[in-house]
Image 1 (cartoon, rainbow, N blue to C red):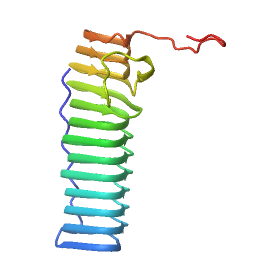
Image 2 (cartoon, helix red, strand yellow):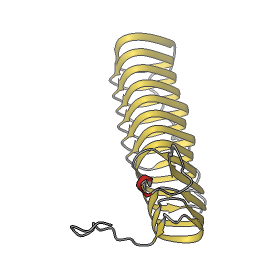
Image 3 (cartoon, rainbow, N blue to C red):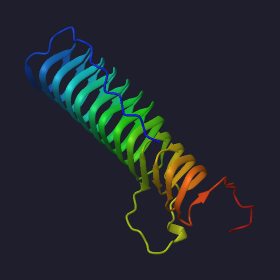
Image 4 (cartoon, rainbow, N blue to C red):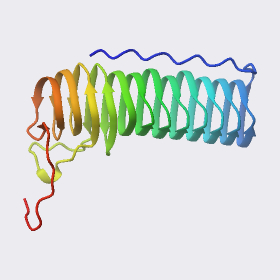
Length: 264
C-alpha cells in the first residue's frame, strides 16, 4: 500500500504587525508579542501573545501563550507553546518541549522529551530521539525514531524506521516500508530464555508494502512482504510471511498465570 504524501504545512496567517529588526536578549524577559526578522533569547522568557519571526533561537526556559510562526526555529532547554506552531523550514528541539496545540514543520529533529497534545505534521524528515508523545495523528515523509514513543493516532509516512529502548505504543501505521526493532547492546549467538525481552512496542494495526519487525506486538498486519524477527506476536496477518523467528508467534494467544504451586 502506498502511503499518501504528507500535506504541506498550512500557510501562516498574515501577522497584524510586520516582521522587522533583529533582537538579541539575555536574562529574564517578558513580552506581549514578538514580531521580528531574527530573534534570539538566552535565559528565561515569557510571551503572553503571538510570536511571528523569520528565524528564532531560544536557549533556556521559554513559555509562549499564543501561536508561533517561523521560517526556522532552534530550541535548547525547556520550551512550552500554548497555541499552534507552524515552521515552514527546519525546526530543532533539544531538551523538553510541550505543545498544547498542533505542530507543523518542514523538517523536525528532537532530542529529549517532547509532548504534543494534538497532531504532528512534517513535510520531509522527522527524526526523534528520547521520548515523543503525540495526542493525534503523525504525518511525515520519513519518520525515524530512537527511544520511546506514544502515538495516540495514526502514523502516515513513506518510511518508518524505529529503535525502541523502553515500552512504546502506536495506534496504527500506514506506510510503504516499516522497520521496527528494540535496541540491543549485545546479540548472543544462541537464545537464552532469561535474557529474552518482551515486546517493547505495541501496535494495533500496520498496513504497508514491506514490514520487518522485532520485539513488536501487533494486532493486525497487511503487507506484501512480512519478516518477523525475535519476540514478535501478531494476532492476524494478510500477506506473504517471508521469514519468522522461532521465538515469534502468529495467531491468538492465551496468556494465563500457572496454577498455584505449579511452576513451568
